[in-house]
Amino acid sequence: MKIVLASQSQRRIDLLKQFGLDFKVCAADIAEAACGSPEKTAVNNAVLKAKAVLAQYPECLVIGADTVVVARNQILGKPRDRDEAFAMLRMLSGAKHQVLTGVALLTADREKCFYVATDVWIRELAAYEIRTYIDTGEPFDKAGGYAIQGIGGAFVESISGCYYNVVGLPMPRLLVELRGFGIDVFARGSCKEE
Image 1 (spheres, one colour):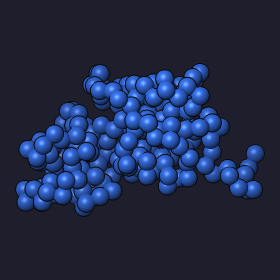
Image 2: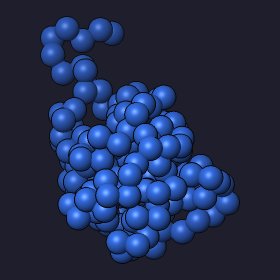
Image 3: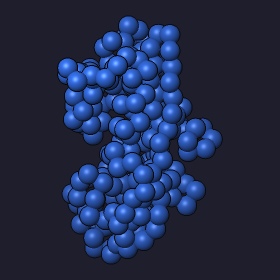
């Protein structure tokens, strides 16, 4: 079965490639929206993205995903400007937050949805560190205003949970769920167990 990723996120593309998946990219043109809890929001947005793309590729398995950052009971999206990026990073400084990624796997006749949560602790950040980081441009297309796999990783003190989830796609859980659709990245060679 052919896979379509309903996202143009370079991080998600890189993760799927890293694990040897063959897929096509088709960004979903939908507006992300909050709908209740952060968990429901992430899953609902993932489903909306996947459904929009499934309409174009009804013979494929579509992967939709949405990552949200939750701090102080508030969902942090992608910062729109320098001031918002600074405020987000100031809020995360010296505190724990949660990263939730909702995932939707859709075919014409099947749907599997789930989310994965990871706790992240950011060290105390000085104002000059935040400003210098914003100058790199990295915060602007990332929920919560930082990239754990980039320069922003220097701010992360520790995590509890799935690292890949913080990057944008919880690969360990995704790979297990893909088996239910007949896709197993570890069953390619002659050592396949029955």
